[in-house]
Length: 51
Picture 1 (cartoon, rainbow, N blue to C red):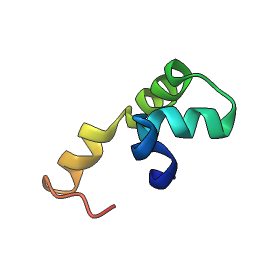
Picture 2 (picture 1 turned 135 degrees about the horizontal axis):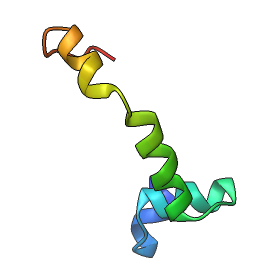
Picture 3 (picture 1 turned 120 degrees about the vertical axis):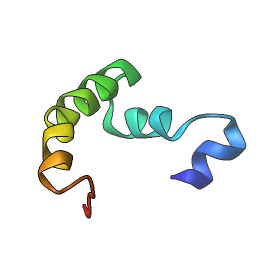
């Protein structure tokens, strides 16, 4: 996907949204929803996240 985005001056978020047929705003909402609770998970892992 990076080969599509970079030469056209687009972000990976733009390309990912276009690929999924949604807007960049919808991707941001999904990312924000996915990030909920991350800080708590990180603290439970002693401040180290291994994915």
